[in-house]
Length: 156
Image (cartoon, rainbow, N blue to C red; front, top):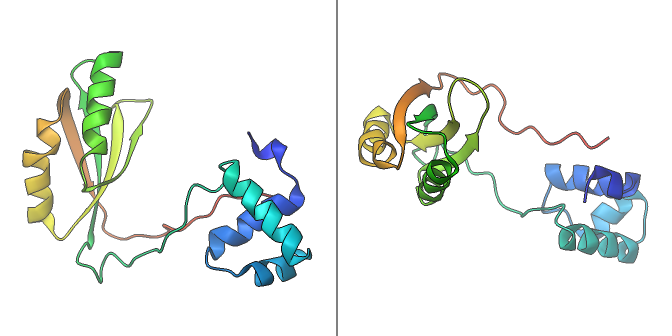
């Protein structure tokens, strides 16, 4: 499945859902110019085919006590499939990790986390991250200001 497997109307539905996942089927149908039945069928197909990976609320991390956003570069001691697999399995189980991406370049993974404060991050670093299999080196980047964090995919 790819963007080429869906038409302009499907892309319009997906663009609208990215901005408002709680939109009613009737309102969605009105905005794309189809009947509610046709809209519902298209949405059901897009969900079934995996174009939508889920729905959820965007929470305000500052109001919930997670105001410190931290990115961490992680370098592993070896770059073998086994070491990659062990690290990936372990990082998936770390609740403080919001995102983790294997990257090309001067390090192996980029990890995104949120904490109450620097003390909480320091505890995570020592008690969780440094205990993960294969971790050789880390670099921490505490975010001073979030400029943009809600960018939708551009499905023109």
